[in-house]
Image 1 (spheres, rainbow, N blue to C red):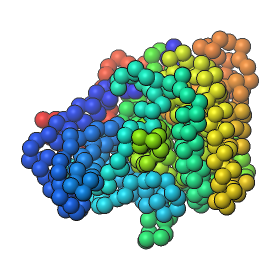
Image 2 (image 1 turned 180 degrees about the vertical axis):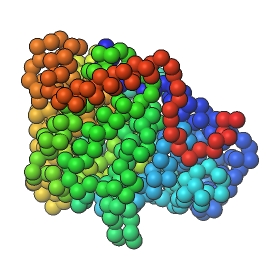
Image 3 (image 1 turned 180 degrees about the horizontal axis):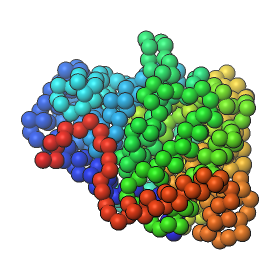
Image 4 (image 1 turned 90 degrees about the vertical axis):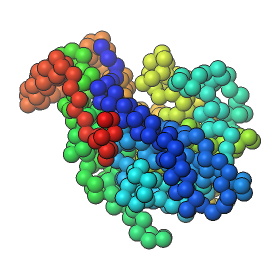
Length: 476
């Protein structure tokens, strides 16, 4: 039985096809010339070279080198990969400016940006930024030597302790600075004027993009564009509801059997029950203030120079004010790889992670001591204590399950079911059978209706997808 939710492969193939077709258009000579000219309108200097485009998961970037030694990049969200391109770009611009004004975290300098309508190239919304000169990203430094680009990265098990502490310590300082930025509501920041921001738009997490892209979730199931949250419990409720909606609406590859569907349904209903009971937050944190949180803040987005110093932190598009519990959970990326993808399973990941977490908390405490000594932090603002408590209590897994819809099943049955509902009498694969009695009569009835629906869907493979704002002729 599957331990996690698989992507809808039909939607994934369509997403990839749209991306590939769009990227192919970029290599036309007239397109490249137009991109170069557009950069020159917003960055002074004599151009030397327009480099080959660099494609990430959600964006494509072009770098223009200048005679003065500097560079600028223009970045476009990729159609087919980015489900909310306009919203994503606006959010990133506002949060970059906010972080630049309130911290010393080295974020990009924005030269110009615009919406799809403001882009004369016809390539969608864009950002033009000063290029941050670097040698590699932090993932490259931490990754196991010999791994190919196509391999999923895993922290080098033989990495030198002093080197690891140096790198973890710098990242810890950035997390510490972010944790001091407190906001009154959960949602995305909007810049009102040069020095004023408001939480005025919905949170746009990484998971929202992926639920629509490869989970075929209708956009109407997400929070409204201007919907913000005044309590952590309300937001946890929303995330729990989305987990169930995801199971209901993913058209293909959601379940492999009737019992697999029941197992997934029961996990989501029980998680929703816990959320509605307010079990995931406390009275001291429920009403805020809330912390700045970036879903995509990980080593691959941290730029390093030849002296192993952080010189830039990029890709802030999935950043918003979130429940404090998110920031209080220690970072999952200490091993580079996510627990649900660990080769030997979540329990093996946990054992290795605990060793590296001790190192991270050690250097985090050192950063806290230094910040307190310089008057930049108060003792009650330490992150190390709540991070250690989050790990020891298992709250780390609550926030991980809430934020990760495709990892939810593995985490719920491995880490949450026993904690909240006691030891089960069945084997792990069959534990769900002992939880059926926790469902109401209506929930059990709805479960069987869903089983019938999902099994009927497995008879055919149909594209059920709401793409982004893409030219419908792009694949013609």
